[in-house]
Length: 178
Image 1 (tube, one colour):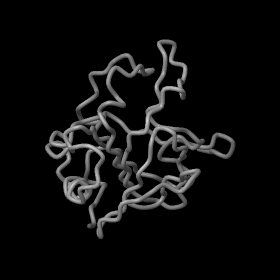
Image 2: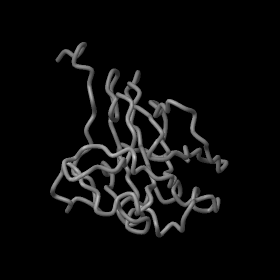
Image 3: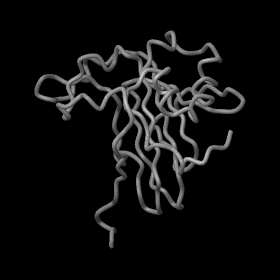
């Protein structure tokens, strides 16, 4: 399965599976490959999809480069509430280097053409610095129950369920030069 990610939109933000297929048909075979295994914890209609396409250069990170967890509940003051973490599974696929590094090796689902990491809100992971110039696609399936009414730093939720307007990269400011 070879896709030229440079021709893709920069991604989708928390779309249902069918809407993701409409907006980014190039990801359909990848996601459908996972669904067809029958190993999802819930029906596919119970997931939201995040897709991020990055153009990376050496020394850029595609995501937060420090250890973190995804979709950890927060209180009304945006403070993390790890005591409210539940065990629902999320699924992660990346097209190639740089990979996402997990503190503890996650379970995986190998479909024969794709390999998906299986993780939960409690699984720490981080972005890995790119060492090459590359286009990278990240796909994550998130159970809807982890997103519902979730406080975030972005008060405007209208971006959900549609195309991403941008996809950021992160730099190590201690060794960055222009």
